[in-house]
Image (cartoon, rainbow over all chains, first blue to last red; front, top):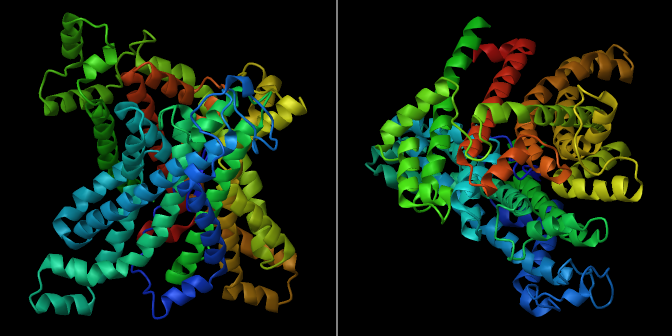
Length: 304
Length: 314
């Protein structure tokens, strides 16, 4: 991310990874749960992510100060025992801001992951299963992916205005095509397999075949992709906030706090420094988690 | 090659048509009445009606879309409300800094990423491999805009080696231009260098596992001759495609980098246009960058097909 958040490697969040056009997903095989938790990347990523998530969920209990209350007499205090990470130009406690900002990141990342997965499954199954709809749907997906991701998100935010749900909707529109492509290519290769043909010969309806026989084999790639989308979405949310087109400035989010730190960087580097560290650690944990899941669930994607 | 080229160019037409449609629809995503939003709360009913007619928003949507296609094909992106000039002219005035920034960042990304990936891939499991790949994982996760701020604090505020922000055209004053461009280009290019390094490494590992490399080793060639004479060229082929993806990320990232470093390019143009509700400019920037991105990818595919003839026959 440049502002690039990082994609698949999550880079620019806005930088989503190259669309994967691989064919069939690898079956997870037996004992997949045990193998997932035996993977070192998954272990490290999951523990870090869980800690961050708990800190965000219990921000109300953990934060020593109210993150939205202004204390003008305490402005730009360096990190100390009273203010672990210092205070910003309005005297707000940076540690409390980071904790509460985690809620916005978690909400945006989690809901975007959910929306892109559901949307991608629906679009991808229809395109992969109904031949006639494949071409038009994929042209629209190609068109959406022709925009640099962060730029499309900025344009959508320009039209819809600031707000958490507008951020979520914009990022879902931006990242759904990538998931849809993966599901489509999986569905395309599966629909010709004997067991699917057998189900059709038995007179099963299309919808039943799509959901009962094709969808389960798509879940592993969706989970892997969803983890990376979570990372991009957190990064993209921070970028939008930083640019002033994301969640409104009075809502504490990592991007908004980094943006306010930009104005005072000469006197108070800590305002932008610490939220950025948290953002990096969150991205790192999700990338480790995604890399690990990919290695276990979809070995053919390994290595990139 | 000509047939492949023609096929690829034809395939661009539907993609660009969808791009233009999406850009057109942006205006219609504005909640409520777009015209009242654009003109602000002080506008009179007459003004609103006049603007609505001038923009054609009183006509059916398919009619508006066809008009929009026609205008775009003639190279007319409308008039900026705020800058008092055609959008195309405003874009042209701001294009140079963005192009210089994007290309410098690409140079940084390739210059760091390719050698790191090659070294890591040539000696997998070695200490170099671990150090480089850990750095690459971090590089991928560090947000570029935050890295920029840290660079400004370290190199401009503390050490005073480089200017904190601003832009000087390289064409006018090359030395000053370079000084202004170092921090933006490095902070924008660094995370992309990590992506390139990861892919270059995995390509190198794949190539080194192939039979012809074993043959080269068996006939007694030195490690250097095997890597630089035999493996390197084939390992770099897939890396070319990554550059297309990299460009997309860099174009998007340039928007943010321009804001951090106060560079008067397209990114700053689009962000200030959003704040002024200057929608034609927003549409223009988005349309032009998406088109540029599509064309860059076409070029990358061409280069790829040229260096790897197998691609042309699929």
